[in-house]
Length: 178
Length: 178
Picture: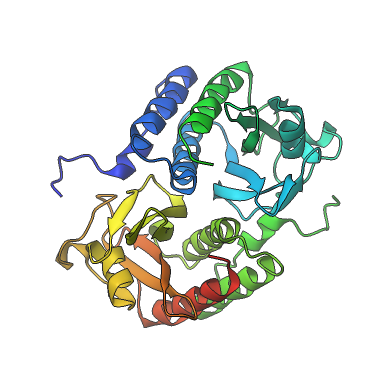
């Protein structure tokens, strides 16, 4: 492959001078390009995790985890760890438990400026201080999983993150065979 | 959760003063502990990617990608991207093509000191200079996927990596429902 040709890895090149809105739009556009013709959710969520990880580090937001929990095929009232980037994570989360379980059971994005103040917060990483979790809801209304991003600082995420990550989660819901 | 309690993320703490053999043994031991009672391959390969990524960076080996390709359920003569850590990657690899496809078709570890010299090398990331790919073979002899690690330096991997990663791949083959 020639030097001038685009490699898949180049999708994770984000300019640090961009505005957050531009960077998050680039995540959405890159995800759309990558999943064109591909509906395998493991493949697509793996690349999505990489896009999100590199995008947030270029904003820069000091994230320490970006990835997915999905419905556990063995227990539909439980989430199981899916593809992610970052440190080793908890494997199982019951619906209604912690930030991820609450996003799944309420079908609402959880924007948490300080995880210590969230009742029943599950600490996979003691360094996490803030978090955003967006449910992935298919067209029949079933929660297929959640998109979870953790930050080492307080107030890591705001309404702009919520807006773009909800668009991304909707796109993820629509572009995969679950 | 108390400060003194172990978090899942702590599994990715590797001491940089350790020998490579000790660090790679720690990956195997941590993987075994994490998958105890859990046979979901997406969950387990996601955490395995994280362990491998953090272990190699602590050796330190300058790796830029660590993860898995698995059998494509839609085409058993093809690998599809699985969980990984690093930059966005190629989604599909035919058996016999590139380093990953060769490991899958020959059922043999590919230890590649210089990817430019490997016939038909598939460049997902133009920065990769060396690579090791270990097939994951179940007890019936079927290749379920490959473990792939890329390095930004030449000669990133040696016989020690091969020895421990083959042990890990065997453990991965045995501990998951495919």
